[in-house]
Image: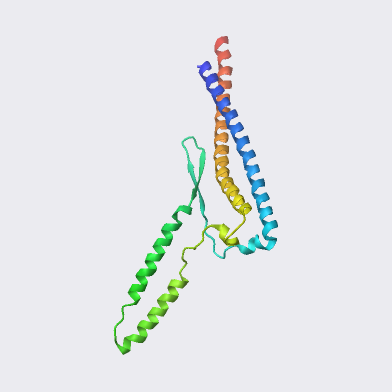
Length: 206
C-alpha cells in the first residue's frame, strides 16, 4: 500500500513538472507573439500614418468574431476553447439576400384601386425604411477593412499574430487550471502518506 502511494505521488510529480514546462513554453511564445503584433502595428503606422491606424477607424457597430467556450472536466479542471465565426459570413450574406428578394416580390403586388393605392405606397415606403433600419450583416467582417481596402502586409501580420495570441491564451488558461488540480491532488496524496507513516509506528509499538 505504501509503495503504491509513493508511485502515485511520483507520477503526479512528473506530470506536474511537465505541465510547468509546457506552461513556461506557451507563456514565452505568447509574449513573443504580443511583441511581434505591436511591432507590426508600429510599422504599419509608420508607413500609413498615425491617424490612419488608430481607434478612429473602428466600425460604429462591431460584432465579436471569436467566442470562448468553457467546460468543466471530471477532475474539476476548467477547459477553454476558442470558436471563430468567420466561416459563417457567406451564409449570413446569402440569407440576407434571399430575405430582401422575398420582400421586394411581395411589395410588387398592387391592387389597381385609387383608394388603396396611397396606402400601399405608404406601406411600401415604410417597409423599405424598415429594411434599411434593420441591422444587416456587415459586408466586411474582417477588421482589416476598417483601415482601407489595400492595407500593408505589416497590418496583416499583426492580425495573424493577435489571432494566435487569443488561441494561445485559452490554452494557457486551460493548462493553469490543470496545474492547480494536479497540485491539489499532490497535496492530498502527501497528507495521506504522512498520516499512514504516523499510524504505522504506533501499531509497531503496541
